[in-house]
Image (cartoon, rainbow, N blue to C red; front, side, top):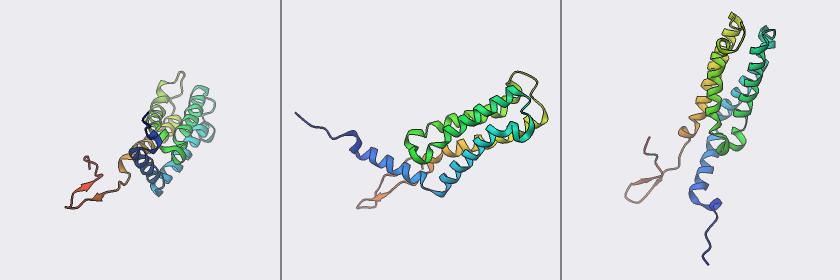
Amino acid sequence: MTTHPSIEQHPDLAEMRARFERATATPRAQAIETAALLTGLYLAASPWIVGFNGLTTLAVCNLITGAAYVLCMGGFGSAYERTHAMAWCAIAIGVWTIISPWVVVGNVDITRTIVNNVIVGVVALLLGLAMAAMDVSAPRRVRVRAGGRREGVDPMR
């Protein structure tokens, strides 16, 4: 009977986890996560901050999408390798936030709601894109073999 090493001990998996840890340990990643959490909290509270809580359909929409944005972007620091794909969900929430004053049922497309949701939506969209790009910009270890040949280099760079 042949025993196979556990997948947890596979060198590629270990390198990927180390790479994700390096990506989330950077000040840039921590700043993006913090800004994203604050953006989501503001989006959830914005109907009461800006003063359009009487427009209940948009107020509830912003509350739900703000909470969803916080949940999507909140797990990056602790479990980046498992939550990285959620950045694409955060991008979709940002787009939805931008268009929601015109899509939500009722007469909710007033100046306050449009300005608020467009600005918050653009910020949410940009933070989601920054987090989605975090893996691509993560530093990689490069080993130089004898003869000057490099290993571990991403061919797309």
